[in-house]
Image (cartoon, rainbow, N blue to C red; front, top):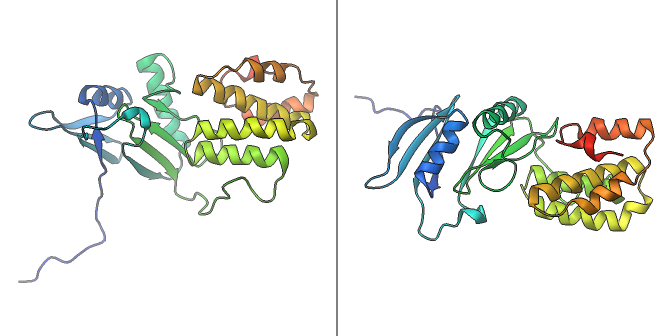
Length: 242
């Protein structure tokens, strides 16, 4: 009798900590996930499915602090990330009346052309959706081909999209605007200030200083068009621009 052979048709399912079964179920079901298994006693175990992938959740360690956002995570490799982001954003608007963009749970913003975004759940787990043909190498610190404020903007993009670190992106851009803002073009400075307004809003920081600087700029029609072309995905952009 022949023994079964190893075949390249395995399926892996992430198992992440669950701080609150009720909050976890409410969040994922609001996004359209189907709960295929629910158990709270003698221990927590949840199985959720959406489209062609599954997420499973087990007991959380006693010292788990969801606010630290170091709980667990998984990567979901897809052909194109934009449709997934659009589906989840639409589901959030239906369930919550708004897009959850700060705190827990939340979804990170999506820039047209970006190759990833992240869902953060109530337990502090990160579900990162990644486009399969995403560049294999990234220049952390900003592309070497760029200088000044342009380099800082590229660095902030990497921090936000690939490291999910809005705070570091905010700090890096603040420093760059102070150092390179005067020598940058009006359009480039406007783009940086728009990002600072957006980051400040997401982080719960005062946005008024950056908004005041932004509205004090004089932009030509061409410069304004460039800003709108690059940042049209930001909610409130038209209200911010001078």
